[in-house]
Image 1 (spheres, rainbow, N blue to C red):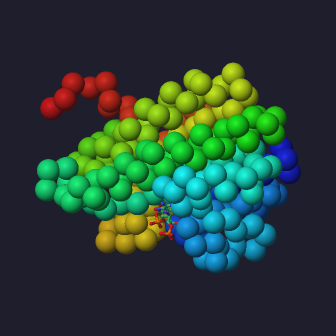
Image 2: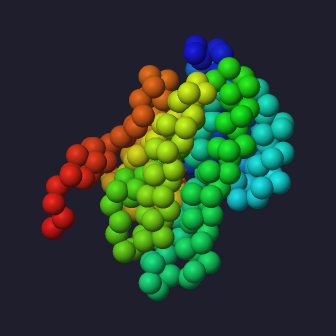
Length: 226
Ligand SMILES: NC(=O)c1ccc[n+]([C@@H]2O[C@H](COP(=O)([O-])OP(=O)(O)OC[C@H]3O[C@@H](n4cnc5c(N)ncnc54)[C@H](OP(=O)(O)O)[C@@H]3O)[C@@H](O)[C@H]2O)c1
């Protein structure tokens, strides 16, 4: 798949990492749909805005109808409530699952047939190092990302015979609104991460581990628990 043949849809394309994905895909010569809850907030030159709330089935259905030439899907949209599992609001815990797990799955289920009809392609799910590290301070987020990791692995197997490659991006802190409370020297540049993730996706990598922390954590998964 050369970049000129790519028609991509990026969820949460109005800001943060999603915006960087959309900008990078345009720079590589792709046609890009920038999906956002408020499409008017998508102001990237060359990007076609599309209304999409990934937790709203009707909105997802409409987006898949409008963007019917897509062959690359970037499931980027996400939230972070920082809710703990025992003392956090249940609504926040549900929102994390509804967004990262059910929302991402819903978009994937709507667009997989579109990508298949268009001759196959690629899907990237944006996950986190917190798929594998589960601190109590982000219990709800980590549980939702861990569930999305399992979902990503299962659909990779299911979609491979249909000519659709599914990849996961795992990454630590990036400099976006989501973690504005974290000091700048602990965050990576989302523009660099977007480039790295797209390089991995188009090289058919199943997992892109974007930073040293993420690579160290993944390598340590087989170590005995301390
Ligand atoms: N920042 C980090 O340190 C970090 C680390 C690891 C992984 N991640 C993951 O990276 C992805 C992007 O996050 P970010 O850092 O760019 O965060 P961000 O700056 O807070 O942006 C989040 C994006 O997701 C959108 N979104 C949230 N809920 C949505 C919904 N129901 N439907 C459609 N769009 C929705 C937001 O849209 P609105 O503008 O409408 O709110 C926004 O565009 C997320 O999956 C996040 O979990 C982030």
